Length: 61
Image (cartoon, rainbow, N blue to C red; front, top):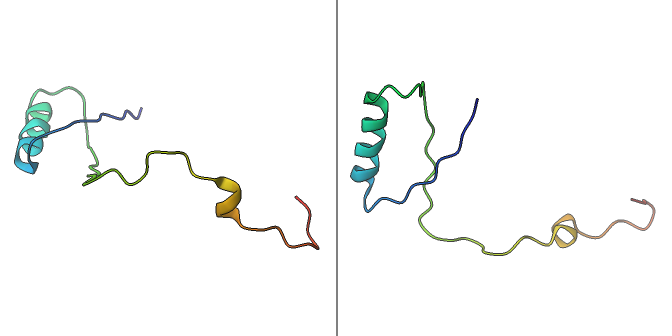
């Protein structure tokens, strides 16, 4: 089963300490993946129609 956990840590070393503590607590976590955001990239939903581009006139959706 997959879960998503969001954390905010003051430094990478603090994050590593947190993850190490969780591993040592034997919570049943076999492995984890880390994604780090350094800033907010976008705050609104994307315009899917604009991303898809125009539909050629000889094709219909």
